[in-house]
Amino acid sequence: MSLLIVSIISVLSLFFTLLLSIILFVSLKKYKEKVTLLDIQVQSTSYLVNELEILNNKIQQQLDQLFMVSDKTSLENSQISKQLEHRIKTLQSQIVEQEQRINQWQDSQGQDKFYNRAFKLAGKGAGIEEIMSECELPRAEVEMLLSVYQQRSRTQ
Image 1 (tube, rainbow, N blue to C red):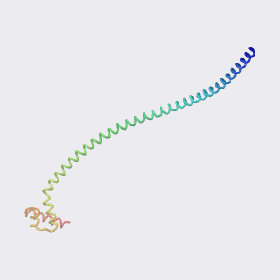
Image 2: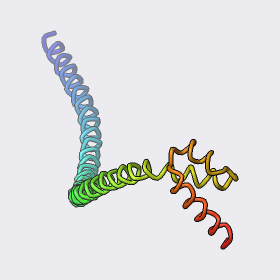
Image 3: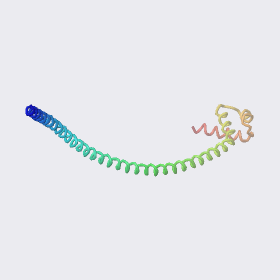
């Protein structure tokens, strides 16, 4: 019996060894397929990384160009701003000068307004006495004003 047991154990041992070998072979085949798939994924990822690096370089070049253009535009805008500030100051001084002239003219018009009013009254046919009282002018000035008005009326 002992021989029979040894034989059975040998056969069982051989069977388990064969079974284990088959399992290992199948597992090895599955792992080999997985390694092949992983290798393909690594190659694909490597390709994608290379493509991303190329795109990154292009984008970096474009950014560098944009920064150069931005710097140039900023400098131009600064120069234009300075020119405009100078023009504004010049125009402001001209405005002040014109306001002074207007004020001077208005001051001189204050003296002439009586004569202008008298001239308008003469145009409406007012007499010497009416113009004298309305405009507070002396008789001689009103008479002279009426003669000027009459001469202008004739020439027109």
